[in-house]
Length: 97
Image 1: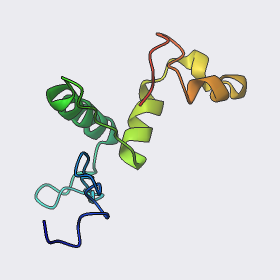
Image 2: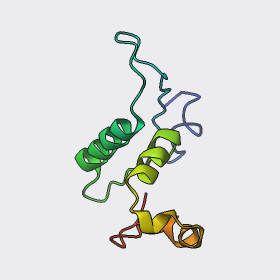
Image 3: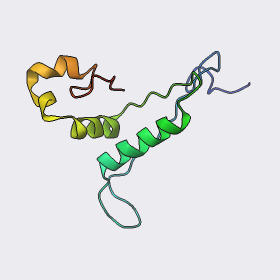
Image 4: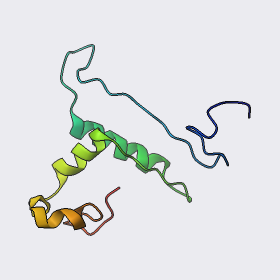
């Protein structure tokens, strides 16, 4: 493939790609403020749709982080929980992505 995307957003061996989206603070049609928890839910739905048969989806960014924090149980809110919370969900022990 002749493209400057390989090595930037597509892995050199073409086994991975990065999808980038810029989120607007307000919906341009309604003017409503972006609901980061809803965005995080939508991102998890995308992960659920495509993550299978050895394919993994890694989601990073502000909206995802805010959604994870918002749904974290109160036990995770203490400062002593943060080191473990960054790797595991306080309530279920499942990996936080």
